[in-house]
Image 1: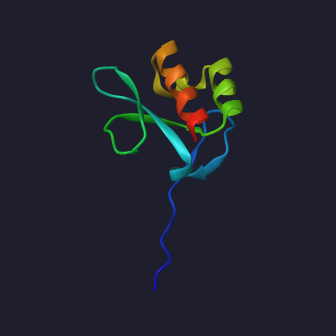
Image 2: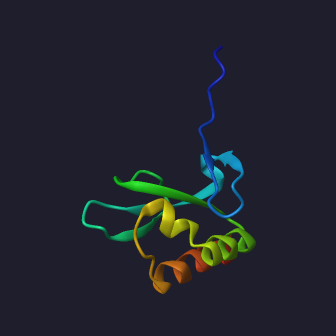
Length: 88
């Protein structure tokens, strides 16, 4: 039997490569709307963040999510990410 390749993505907070399933995706669509994508299937430009509050704080301080998506991220999105992380 063939071994399946596990997709790896880089966390914008800690810059570590991790399995895609272990990360939360933030998406910017064609209309420049930013949303949290828990399924990982929404169309658009995606950036990934660990399910760790330290990574979120690091990404927020250095504005790495904004740089990778090319758009300003509202406080509402950061609060939604914080809630998702605290929920896990």
